[in-house]
Length: 474
Image (tube, rainbow, N blue to C red; front, side, top):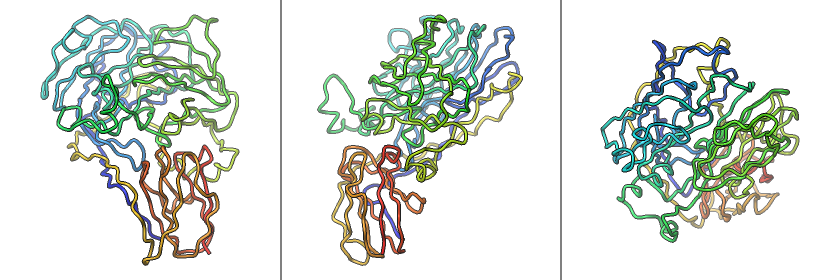
């Protein structure tokens, strides 16, 4: 069997940069972005307010949105979103911003009531932190809840390129307790926006030039900087209570919908809804900058969709799963489940979450050199000749379906998959024997099947929506 992608060359970088440092007394804690944690985050009896120190290094790096799609991003400490900042109400938060970008930047603490000089908007509240410089933000965590942080110098470009992250301030006297917690930050990605475009070193892309008022186009819709199978799932066990923190860091509203479950809205913009006044819903519309805390009771075991109900958003990235321990899909996707999610990894647990609530000491990741700049290109599919000069059999990839559900060919035939739809697709064998990179509209991928038998072919992004076909090789 031979296979190759005809349309692009993607460089992937396994970027590890600068750790996130948290100092409390003499303890050093590295905090992972958007963790799944078990409550309580802190001990039931709150200690005296503490000073919590962080370092956020803004820099450029390669970022894998999902297998086969790598982009050049700006972010903090080697990831987008950046590391979660978590503290308790009344703590002093001290963040050192280290700017390794080629342009000035600042940080705004969205939803936090801070002194004006700590608020971040460049020009109004502070001068930009220039390349190579550092700036220390310090303030008291006066208002608890789901907050977030983001760049506030050229924010239209800098946030869109990845300079944002979650921030959670625990109340000193929490009214609710949960078995699990998941933070989801929603954003969009424009493939035409690159660091060079943001710096004025390259022109805006042809589609972006048609938009007015500085608007950017959108190709992918992300959760926690990832799309489709790379998004962390909501993993739970029966009867558990799960807190889902939704944060919208993008420019578009999103209608987030849970299958098989309703949820209570227990906080808006980080502020608690009084008990007895919570709304019971299964879809919530979240606008740019907003946050909603959702309480979901795991009372319907299975595997369920959790996605934006603006269907093109879900089809182009913004969909994940509610998955109960030991459960598998009840439909045809059960046979493809591992192939669709073979690259899925849950983020590590928050090191603050442990049975005693005590802080743990863990090593800080070593710094790494940035990878050379790589930009995805789009190349139209060219006519294929197939293996050994034979004409290839062409199969169309349409949105959410293959052009043919049953394909019969002779052994040694080359199949040529061409994306004729508007969504990004990745063709794969359900048994994992081959898989393409991400195919944008007009891209093509070829695979030669030499061994007789039956192959189940899926799109890794849309198999949960029924995009599968059978190939009989005789």
